[in-house]
Length: 197
Image (cartoon, rainbow, N blue to C red; front, side):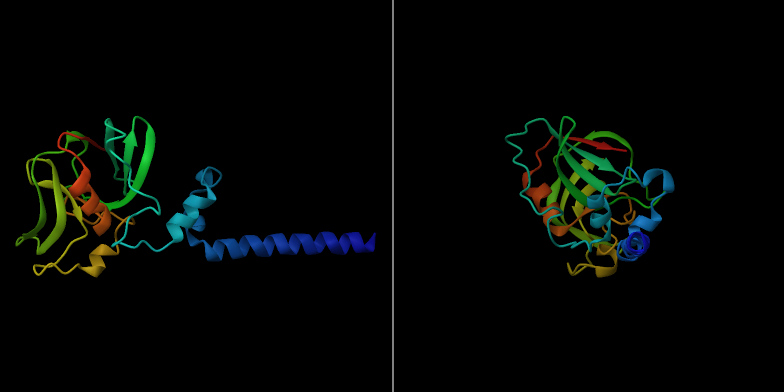
């Protein structure tokens, strides 16, 4: 009986230590509201804890073949800072993004469509930022999908790029990783539906 008590105590100590270690190694788990902790999956916590490579594709899988998904659309979630490529309600691919920071620099909410304007590079003197691989979705060149920002010489601004997927940081456009923006520029067709919420 003595051995059973010691064994039980050892199991409790290991469990408590393991939970504390989980909270230290997965700090995002400590920031999840108590009511939502049960619904959060381990993969979400690991994704939040991982460093986002703002140059690379957001996922470790191929981008979807839009010819096989002619009804695909772009779901921009401003609270999660994600763009979901969807076919109906099925998510085909998830991209990290950064949307507008607030009222003056907010990203318009609603249903829009990809417009005809797109290009490889722009620079805005007023904001002091440019970007690569831009595609218009509202007001013909005003609201865009584009890469993380660059300076006037086309060099990426690392401090801004590191906000990707973590917080709203743009002037209203939807910033994407360099690879994701290039894919959108090269692949997403004119007229594709864009829903921002």
